Amino acid sequence: MNDLTRTVEALPTTCLLVLKDGRTVYEYGDPAHASYLASARKSILSLLFGRPVADGRIDLASTLDELDIDDVGGLLPIERRATVRDLLTGRSGVYHPSATATDLGIPLPERGSKEPGAEFHYNAWDANVLETIYEQRTGRRVFDAVAEDLAGPLGFEDFDPARQRLLGRPELSRHLAHHLFLSARDLARIGLLVADGGRGLIPSDWLRESTSPQPKNYGYLWWIFPPGILAAGAFGQYLLVLPKEGLVIVHRVSLADDVAIARNNEGSTGEITGLVVREFGQLVRLIRAEVPAST
Image (cartoon, rainbow, N blue to C red; front, side, top):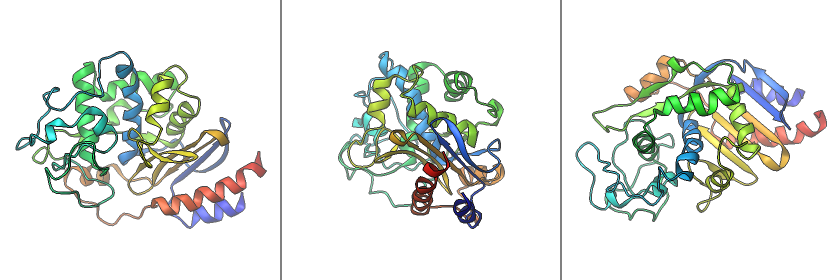
């Protein structure tokens, strides 16, 4: 795949991993290097919700009011009507400041201006609060759930529990972000899990529902671009699953830990070169053109 390699070498890519039918067919960079996932973490959180939703510990119709969820300065009455499902689909209508950056950098509407469930607005607050709800309703730390429900059963090779970090600015929001630091090859195992319908680790009904548009191109913390299912994070952290093609594609732009921490705890990004979704899409088209000839 010489054309693919020449293309990747001109990008800020630190690792590109392509699996076809579960077998690695292309590798660039170090797939064992663990680094900051940014918002790609949210799709992994979506997987964790599967079992507690299935067994009734988490009710998607529960409101923030019923769950006794509040935040710095108090939530508005209209915001307290948002449901767990509204948060999962980016339609909470809660535009309270987030403890961490919203990766798209698009200004949110004024607080109280939208009914819960009415409009999609990508907002890190939603995911951070979902982590609070997960821990409240299950009695388990998010990081422990990742370790026990995913890293262990899937045979992660590079997972370090001590590396995972709770980040954010508590003066903005009491709901901090559970940030994950994973390697490309361990992230690929997540992709294979999704491609294989959950393998019994994730309820298949939940996986189908959470990776279906709700509506448009967002599911439950997954981006849906038929025929693909995408986890995406700032600066070029991507996990793309193309189930019908048997493809799993992992793209990483590694950030130093201190840069990732400063971004979340101080709101500082500095000069970081990444790969935007449009550029990743161009790379995926090249991969899809080259991979069949190589297998």
